Image (tube, rainbow, N blue to C red):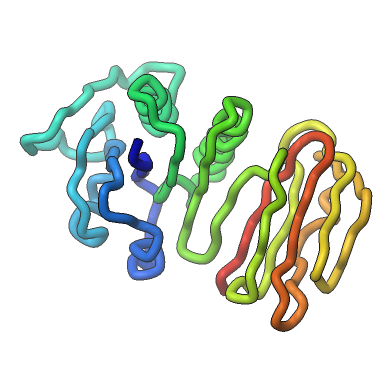
Length: 207
């Protein structure tokens, strides 16, 4: 099964950085105003989804799902649900975080949903990549000068951070005190993050 790429309508300024994450054989879903990124990304849609309140109705020879404008799911959430029905287990989401903090937080919750299903999800923006860490050890290579370990769900316990400027052993982070912001891998080292209980949001910063 190929990876599913979901393209939302949030602003993208550094297309060349985003394009490094794309692979041949990806299944590409464009959500509504995400179609504005079509030419700059240089990829073809396999599926278009939207209520088209922020983009003209597309006239492309591509499967298109038209959504009502009044609904519970955002276009991005609906796209994930549709991809799950089609059997996808690995997700890359781009153009889903940006100026609208409400949309950004809603789309970050998609990562929590995918993790609860035992599936992989990665959100990428102009400067960083974001994923949920729960069961597997995550690595942060020296190409990422900064990283943050945040909690957006319950309380995470038994957090270990190795090979970093600010190491941690058996730590606990809840949603009310985010002390894991802006850490750094040690020079020439690969930092590692592990969680024994709960889950955290790992943000790798490319700047």
